[in-house]
Image (cartoon, one colour):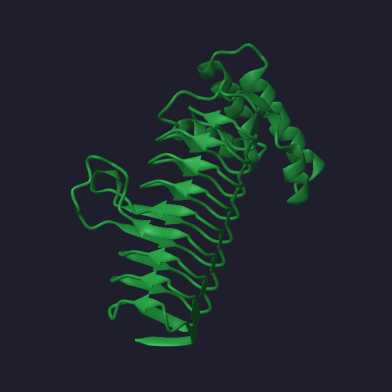
Length: 262
């Protein structure tokens, strides 16, 4: 059942789609079957949303976005998989976000308050946190995980199955082929390398000098002290007793299944 503020007469909406209150749908947009769209979400013209897809409240979806399409994975055989998008996300022109795969968890998930700027691609089974910024032309391969408050600069890319921790910063044109711990900045190089911590971003988010100092110390332990990863973990464990941020870095290392960005 549709309770909408503005549905353009040329929009095509499947009878099974469920649109909340005050949902706007622009000209020539197509809303497929098994799609749910929450209150206050606006959808521009020429948008295609395929199901199964769940979209939350107060999202802004610009023209020519394509959401919920089949995963670009040769193993996909048409099994039921989903795209789940949270609240208050901005999804700009020509963004593509694919559903999950049956053997990859079944769900591609986008959190809340994210910005996906023009031509961003999010592949199947990716897991995106909150307050993430995807700059123009940045892209994720399948199964990538992106933590809260991360920024991906223009033309950057993340390899399949890689994890990027919270508050990380991926520089313009940087290709990420390994796991990036929280707070770390990656350089603008074809194969990205760590180049310190995202100090400016942390300051803007209210991290005080003591917190930032602890994170810098942890970075030096991990990347500049000449220690093996096992030795660095031991020192980080000691530092984590006095810093929740260092504990977050250590927890990320414990979850990492790929090589760490070095």
